[in-house]
Image (tube, rainbow, N blue to C red; front, side, top):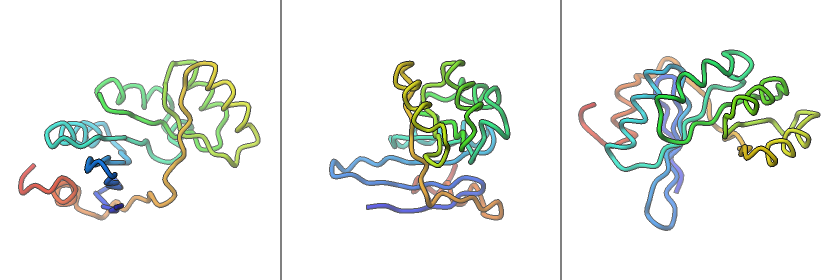
Length: 149
């Protein structure tokens, strides 16, 4: 079962597998959001995969991502879009999980380099969009099925 939950600047997809465990995919835009989601996933026993905003490797930079990743103990994926330079920087700096667009002319070369260096290339969820007008706290409560955060 798949549920889409839109949290202020965070889009969550809850995927329930046949083992009755849930994996939460969430896009974060600030370190505070990433830390809160990380804390809630631990508190409520949900596996969390945090994804940076689209093309964050090029827009915000790899350093921004690394500063946030250092505070997170769940899987954290840097989205590089089609930006080969961002993907190469991420691999050079030992970021182990990146999204890189199959639309890029360099996709197969990046995948080969990633495989040799132990980097996992992820596919971005097609239906992850942000809505900055939603109430972050309310939707976190809904995602984690709690009354208070």
